Length: 106
Image (cartoon, rainbow, N blue to C red; front, side, top):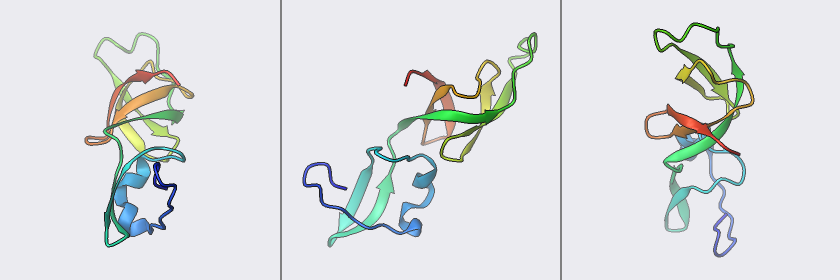
C-alpha cells in the first residue's frame, strides 16, 4: 500500500522474490512501479526480527568467539549469531548481506 495515497498494489511471489524473507506485516519497503505495475521490491537495509529458534549458548564456550545459527520470525536462518543470543531476542540484520549486526530493542 502506498503510504501517501493509500493505493494498494497486488504483487505475486516472483516479484517479491528474496525480499520476502526480510519483510513482515506493516514494514516499509521501496517499491518500483512501471506503468502502474510493481516490478521490484527492495527491503530496508536493516530490519529487526525476533529469534524464534536457536540453540542455547554453553557457558564458557566463548573463548574462541563462537557462533551459532538462529531462525527468525520470517523463517529465514541466519548464521554466525553470537552465543549470547536467545529465543525471543530481537536482532538487527543487514538485508544486503544477511548478517547479524546487533541486538535491538523492540
